[in-house]
Amino acid sequence: MSAKMGRKPRNKAQINAVREKIINHALKLFQNEGYEAISMRRLAKQVGCAPMTIYAHFDGKINILQHLWAVVLETVFSQIHNNIKTSKNPTERLNIAAQTFAQYWIENPDHFRLVFMSAGITRPDVDSFLKNKTTLSHFKFFSGLVMLALADTHTPNSAEVKAKTDGLISALIGIVFCANTIADYPWTKPEDMVNLMLTTLLTSKA
Image (cartoon, rainbow, N blue to C red):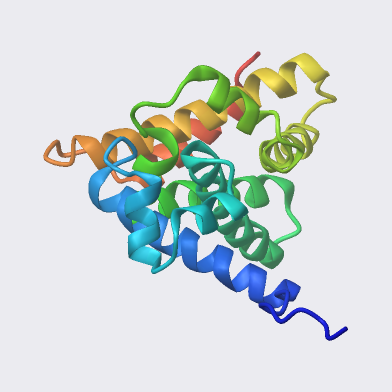
């Protein structure tokens, strides 16, 4: 009996290429029209495939959005890791990381809105993403930088490191939010605000 004729199974490279194509089109749609305006059918039309092809790679729209968040965060922290290679000084490394983090979102406001301002997202959707090991590792990296910078003057405890890391991340996002959404206000240069915030963070008591 002759073997059945059918489509040859795709290899890993081909599967990844399809996923990347879906993600690229999804990113453009989300940037242009927002999360709520997108449907799986419309995304499939943009990609040039059947809706079931999208579902073969992603569970649904929120899964695609979470993947987009992950891609953007990976880009941000890759830049941070690359930029801090130029220094071995703990305080300078923290400053470079913070400046890179803020600069990326200011230069890519669409990515900022995608990650931090997507409408129609439920708390469980965000929580499941934040509990992801890769996501946590990004923000724990900042925690390590803070700990080493503080260690230049004293031995910080875990509560101090956490409080100051949380304060750092919150302040950075706030600086970028103001720069991106209230652009007409004559803000102090973001890099100067980051420097001021870091000086306060490293010298103040938790």
